Image (tube, rainbow, N blue to C red; front, top):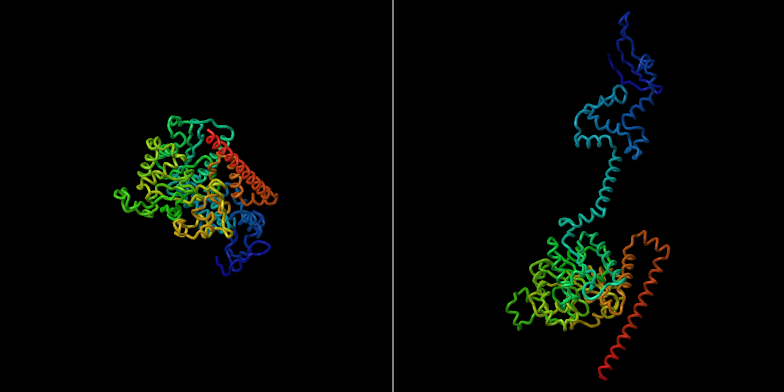
Length: 541
């Protein structure tokens, strides 16, 4: 057999093989003849006339179907299992076997059908039988599935809670429920509504970031009913929480009448990742109670204090901070504060909960545990080096009128948002030598800000003092609605804008705010009249 030229395919079917001769053995003589077109007519009579279209169809069946099937990705994913198994079991084929299979001259059954398929073989076969476009589409689908898996709430809470990823397990939120229910009075319908709304708000926030929520039921604290500490047992509750959650590091106390306005802020990003920039150690930066700091060198206590304790700012290291406290217009504000687990933390809690001090000074301490901590800070200088202060609006903003009048923000806004400033900047200090006009121009910006500012998107608001002349339930409901409006998705914002719901909600909030202002003024007038009547009665007596 000789091959002088390459076979040429004919449009009508078969191949032209010029110069290809092969012996045609016959019984009579052994002469040779030209082979002619291939396949021969003899074979065609037995198997049917082969055509170019039939050869293309056979090749398409071998390589996964028609061109439409290859481009239709969904059809490829739903291909019959037998064909996919054929691809997996086929193994590596040499080029001659592939060409024979294209010509429908042989059918490979897979040389590794009985062998165990290894993962690397599966991946190699997938790569061989997947086009570049299919590989790209598969990669996109795998990436989307991975994002969906990480965004699933239980899994999100898991990796945010782990100590080596999110670090949420280091934080415990302590919320006092049922205040006064077991000691001084029973709750009504509005008290139940406040408690339910507050617990739901804190639980959603804790679940989102992997924190632990510890709800302290004050009904079980009847052992304090015979003491002067009946209404301020939060110190003992913190100590019990430390014993219960031994793996936690920071314990965040929250009053029941608080609302987390920005649940998208984690404690780490909001405070603890930049603890040195968010806090100030020198109380002279903002000192509404005029506490002498540092301790005078003529004081007897200076003989027992080291240089770090005598320094105004301590050692300026975040690792030495064990307590975070905000300050309002009257001093320490303990509706929202942090305590760290440490030897110092245990000592300060023991000193804070000392019953001897309470029995001697309970008539003077009208603000209960707040006045007690102020007394310890003033008379026990050893605690100052471990205490840091946060701006009030960062973790414990007040509603309008809770601590004087809301001065608002400057016309051009604050120089920097509260979350981006360095609180320890000397330019923010409110010393007496500073220009009064400059201080007045700052208004609610910086460390002197006390009231909630919607434009600044403050983190938390505390309805402090709402028990006297205000409605706690209504205020919490209004702030919860405002938080929902500020944190809606884009689609929800678009729908409300189309329907005009945003405008109606804003108008309703303005009317409600004006109604509360008038109610407060009426209550203040009645209180003044009552005090005048009592004063006249005492003078007459």
